Length: 120
Ligand SMILES: [Zn+2]
Image (cartoon, rainbow, N blue to C red; front, side, top):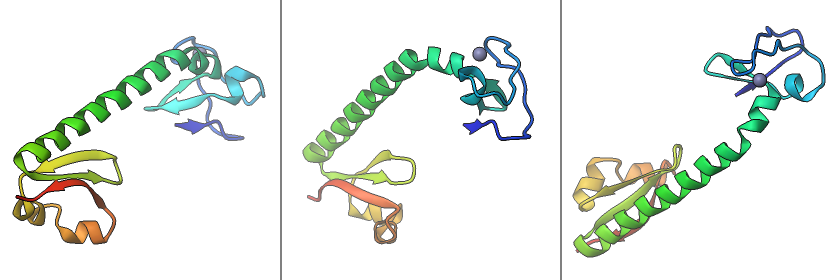
């Protein structure tokens, strides 16, 4: 999200229709742009609880997904690895599959980190 810059183009809050200006109050000073639409600071603050709920639920779902992949690798063999740039986790059946993609070079270049491996 982008913040208002001095002299920048201002608009209206997409939720409450408040016209944004460069004043220092909550609505204006903390306004952000998301997907080309302005959201004023007051509306962002109203979204706080919902945002935290989504954040914690998402973190929990991701942790559960990782646990499932590690359990699968533990049981059937395989490698669970993390793409560092977007924090996503993947599973491959064996070393050959890992070498095809993403490959050992990705580990060396720190693009990927192996979280768990069980090579049978
Ligand atoms: Zn608003």
